[in-house]
Length: 317
Image (cartoon, helix red, strand yellow):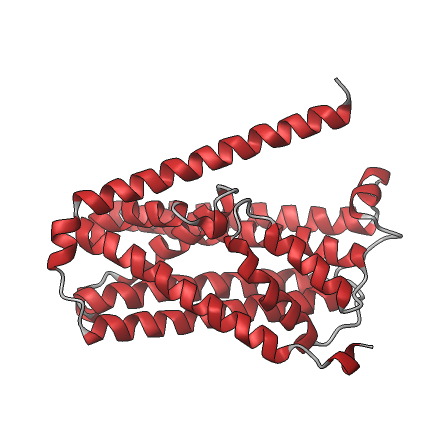
C-alpha cells in the first residue's frame, strides 16, 4: 500500500468515526428531548426567555466579530498586507459554510474567497492551521482550567487547582512556542505541506494576544449560555460560573469531534449532560436548543455583516 493510499484510507476511517460520534450525539440529544418533552412543554417561554435569546445572539455576534478581526491580525502577523475590513468580510462570509457536513467547508470557502480578494494562498493556508490550533488550545485551557477550579473549589483544594492551571497554560505555551520555532526554521516536509517559500517569523506579542482573543471569544460564548439559562430560571437562580463553563466546554466539544456540521448534536449533547445536574433536564434541553438558536441567528447576522464589509468590485482590482 502506497503512502498516499494509506493516508486516504486513514482519513476515510477518521471521517467514518467522526460521523458515527456525531450521530450518537444527535441520538442522545434526541432521546433526551423526547424523554423530557412533557416537562419542556410545561415550561413557560416568556418574553424574558425571548429577550435572553436575543442578547445571547448578540454575544455570539461579538464572539464572531472578535474571531474575524483576529484572523486579519494574524494575517498581518504573517506579513500579508490586508485591511481588517477585507479580512473580516472573507472570514464572515465563509463561516456560514460550516453547516455543510464534513466540518471543513468554511475553511475551503475562506481559501476560495481569499484568492478572489488577491490574498496569497500559502499564508492563508498557514493562518487556518494556526487559527484552529489556537482555537483548540484556548478551548482546552479555558474548559480544563474551569473544570479543575470547579472541582477543586468543591473539594477545598485550590492550591492543586492553581498548579493544574499553571500546567495547562504552560503546556499550551510550550506548544505555541514550538510552532513558532518550527515556522522560523521550517523542515522540508513542513514547507511542502504548507507551501512555504521561506521562514515565517511570528512575534511573541501576536502569540499571546491571539490566544487571549480566543479566550475572550470563548468567554462570550459561555456568557451567551448564562443569558439563556437566566431567561428560564432568573438571574438569581443561575450558578453563573458552572453554566458558563458548560457553555465553553460544549462549544469546545464541537471542535474535538470533527465531521458534525457546526458541531450540531455534539454541542447540544454535551450541554445537556453538563447542565442537567445544575438546572434539571427540562431546562437543560430547552436551554441547549435555544442556545443553538441564538448561534444560528448570530451566524445569519454575521454573514450579512460580511457582505456589508465586502469592498466594491473596483476596490478589489
